[in-house]
Length: 110
Length: 117
Image 1: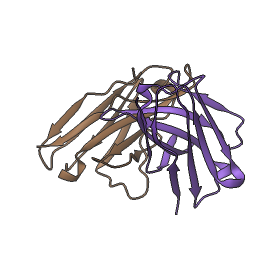
Image 2: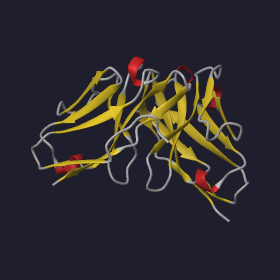
Image 3: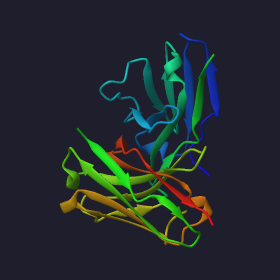
Image 4: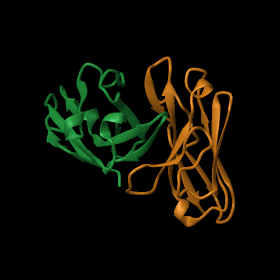
């Protein structure tokens, strides 16, 4: 049972925008950096966003991250068919002394 | 180029043991904390264990505590996961992942562990 809650799925037409929420608590998102991972079908997870809102080299600026209180959000603008994937938030939990991943969100491009 | 290559997966009976390895290259292995993350078939990501660069700090998920042991050999640029008392629900692809601060910036291709009689 993950301590970070995400919607199971989101969808939008090509070119549109989607947002994915990640809800946690004061022991994780509330005082730790959040990262986001993209897992394309049949592939290895890839770092998408780190330290709440930073993008690794090579990640387009269509992807953005933000954090407020005990929640974080991933935004994807200009949606493309190649963005169809599972997305996971993640952070450390200071109470559990463990890393925690979100429940995962499947993005579908209509 | 950073590379992480896992090995050691396979089919094992419930109650059995398996040792996973992760060979690292392309970076100074001893200066990075490392993790194991697993993904059961059709399920989400589950963090398994963490080990600091010098092996002084180790953490485990409750689901594996007391059964799995993480270790590393910095001279061999290798990370290990000794898995004992394996259960059906340990069936998953196991990834090693490099930690850069609070995030995992590089992942291996994974090795499949199947626990079944």
